[in-house]
Length: 379
Ligand code: F6P
Image: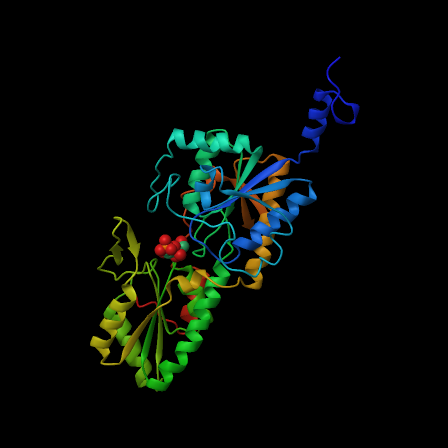
């Protein structure tokens, strides 16, 4: 008979008792650009997991946390208490590093097998059986590769750009649109007081959703989006006509990915050799001033659109996505991504969700509605 362990049990019995007392674990990380609502998802994950008796391991700084044993934290209802109203992500994020599986629209690169093995070994050491990955299109490409390598993954789609085909909406978008609307409300007063044209450049990458929704909500007169190439002369005609009709000022919203009919998107190369959209707002402002003689100013909203407290909608959507991700893990739907369809939170295979951008239909209802309220697209 083996040595008696605590409480008169054998070592084996004690170990089995210890093991059964250890809670099952689920991992979570946030990856890519931050956006309002990430903390609501984290809180949803933690509360739903605790209800199942699971423990949540948060990995810091996106996928990079899977490579560094010291970079994880146990998330529970106490550590996530009160985080829903905070912008950003309490566990950090990055859109760089060893796991970047995508560069630019539609391109796919492979995460090295050695890196995936590192991640697998850390997950095993920490007893993490499933990983919830909260991220955009690029992060889902990485998630798919981890899944293909046998690591159980559940995806939660995130982007302020709202440009993923597999989900009707991503959290973060509504907050970004609210920021654009607020900016337009403020700029409206300057436009009218000074009889100026105010040009506002907004984010959205290759999609015009933020510009379109923000522009409609903020009462823009002209909205320029990547899906509808514009013409500088046409914009000038619209502004002159507004002037002639007695309007004191004009508001122009330009998506960072918008381009003239005969031109290219405006990008800047960073010192790391990356290309970043931005700069079209200044060009549009300059062309308007030249063609109309009107005083014109440009305001670039930039990362203001990604920060701050999430809106009601994003808090609720984020919570629903977090809870659904845990349900999917519990039901064994590995390799799937949470998706919002017809007012319901459902799921789709990650493999089907990646690399499919949802762009603004140029002849769709939203564009038509905008045209019906006298908004020009500069075309
Ligand atoms: O995808 C979200 C987004 O905010 C885009 O709208 C924007 O082009 C990009 O990220 C900016 O990325 P970064 O913060 O790395 O400059």
